[in-house]
Length: 189
Image 1 (spheres, rainbow, N blue to C red):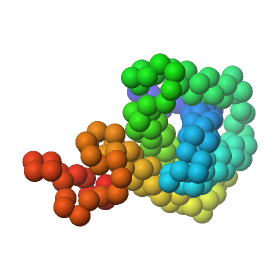
Image 2 (image 1 turned 180 degrees about the horizontal axis):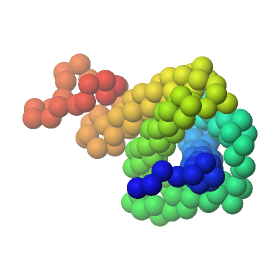
Image 3 (image 1 turned 135 degrees about the horizontal axis):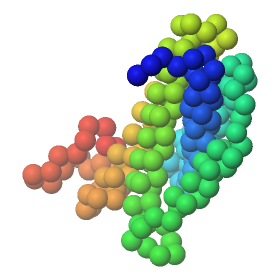
């Protein structure tokens, strides 16, 4: 594959970063909704914190885009917002109410989104090797936070999966351990 011209590389970078911005918009919406549905419940504070952080990460992405002379394409951001709304129309076994399966699927989606965001930060770190417009210290902080967010979401996802799929395990872990023949993931509770 031929090396792109500077113009082509800038165009492709614009598409790439706008796609990440669209994903970020969807992630913010999903986390806000999840935090609202879990308000006053055990996962509520963690989801509220994650929603704030992901919104801050989106603003950091916009700042980086401005520093790289990449224009925001509002139509792509709108697609991310619409995608999140369409994602609500999933088959979860219930027609008019939330299912425990909704939590598992949403947490998986959120974790995938954070992993995608982390990949975007890693790509920008590669670009920063030849482009001094990118603040490498800021990228290091964003990468560290993405890793922490992924760990938090995995912990919540695991707890929801156990609560949803393992009979009799809706509450805190029992001291007797799992039923014979079943093993639970480490850190499930």
